[in-house]
Length: 463
Image 1: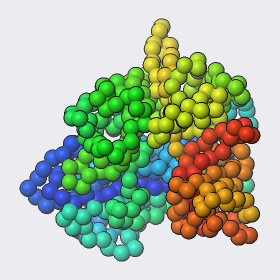
Image 2 (image 1 turned 90 degrees about the horizontal axis):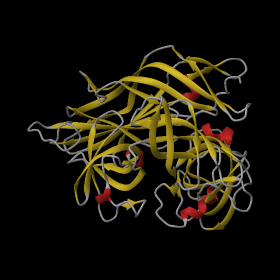
Image 3 (image 1 turned 90 degrees about the vertical axis):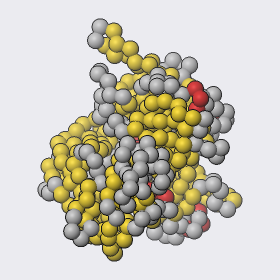
């Protein structure tokens, strides 16, 4: 397969500045006598068609306060820019001095680009080593930002893949990466600095409404729940969490305690192993699936014999527990089960790993359908309005999973769908395509047997 054509998208980091009398510490709630700010970093992205991975080493992110570049990344991290599709993942927490900040500098290294090849069945993954034209980029804020005691801000850093990944005369990605970033410092009330895709292993239950977790990079965080926190699996209450439990957390970082105030808690594994990624092939394609190929993007914890960046074949036996992330209704088993799987779905797999004679085997226990982002052009004339914001439209999908999904993709909206930069479903009208991003779930339309997307949010993007 040739390298895919580049289409404009963005990748985003999010860095929030929390000013209080708390230090950076372990994220478990430490105190200091000196006034200072604290920064937590969350990441999101927007991948290109067929590009399932754009992995780089982020060796530094700093903010300039007029005299000093202050680091907001405590250690280098390998980040896959094509993983989250518009969702936000917590990365780090670092103490900084209060000051007026005027710019941000991002330093990266060692890009690796992965492509999905759908010309063969089942699809495979090809990779190329990228070459950076420059390793460090400084971007000035539109206006200097005063970070004062007890304030909370978010630093949004967008990595524009359309401009960053260079193409040849045929529009094919060459491997040359000229990093282009857009940066803005946002108020903490903006949804862009929320946490909605953070996976971590449970360290222990610390109280009736609290527990501690350890993230992918070894840092521990405290998690606080309330009566309003949604636990997606009612059969697995907080009191039953053990060191073998792996969870996905949504919420916000508390500006005072630095704990995560959880709005949703999803148990993705009770077996001390989680693998997240993208279905690339389902076998058989209809009826109860017995095998599924998963492009693995996340592993927790790291284990020998299983690696991310590769396609892993999963054996399915029908007794797995199927769940839809952030929905705890029994109805979900009718919408998502081993007969309702499709290539292009973003899922999390929990199960038990065993090794015999050097061969590692995964027995799948949980399959969790996860939210994902798809972006592209609204198809003119495709909007069908049923009731208020409930209805459908079609999307020419230009994102990673687009090569695996029907074209155009049917999107279903409800009266609970959030519209961003749009007045509602009726705003999708006119004779010209509209650039949009949809975050939601890929489900199977029972009437047609084809994948559709049920939208949680629809956002109009800048042209």
